[in-house]
Image (tube, rainbow, N blue to C red; front, side, top):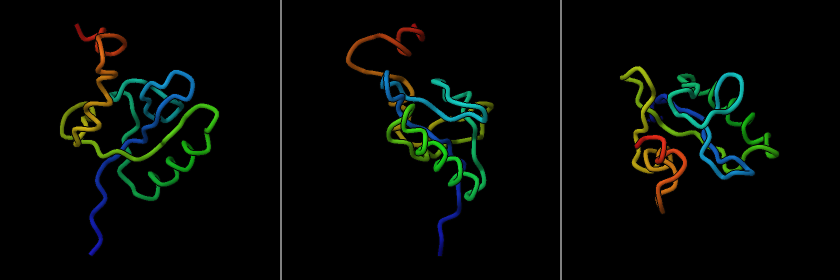
Length: 99
């Protein structure tokens, strides 16, 4: 039996900066809370194809599961939570903004 489709976002890395980025309805953002949440499997597949074809902007695009029980989408896997926080070798970028 097929696994039911769960909400997802399209994520990748920005080609030039390497930052984690998320697809929105109109482009890309570095904030997960601004990402377009996809609840239809066919739509998610089309959005992923669109992201993969943007090889001049992105690298490594894929669908990531998110929890939509709160106002903003939240990662359901520790890998995505880690990626959303930014680099971990020292405080800069997203981690610097939080402090």
